[in-house]
Length: 165
Image 1: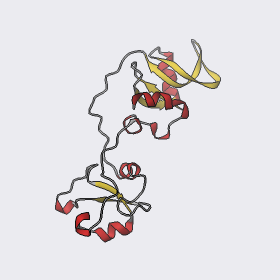
Image 2: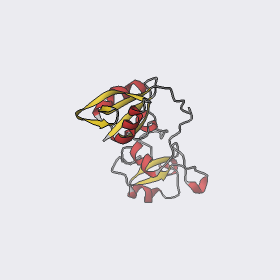
Image 3: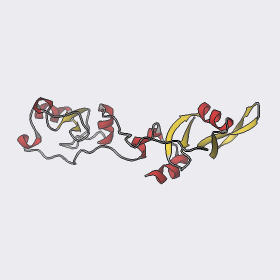
Image 4: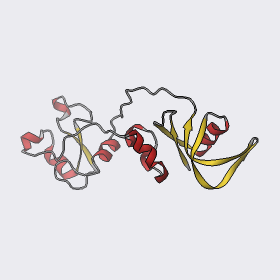
């Protein structure tokens, strides 16, 4: 079981394990906002409800430059596992401006690509192939990318994640 952690200003911070959430609640560092129905957790100081969403009692400052690192898996996820050139299922990634011509490993230069299009394109640009990109590649945004662990979001978290969007 996973628990969403909100900052004192109701900003989503992370998703932590159930054990970590209970420790934060029992140490009075967080309060339970959303509970899970069922058996409470018993401790030395009494019973605590099972937390689904907790709110920290003190504000934690988060660095603004929380950039999402570029990964193969991230590029495929951002593009919905669809080829940027033909729209079929993508299994590889492609540099729009090839690395041999100075293309960087950045969100703006990488797209999801099917194996056929990737092999046909080779070391050329889409303009040289007379191909059009189906979308302009951009860095991902939103709470699903900046809040660690929300890839498999619990339905109870949705109202709290929408506040941050």
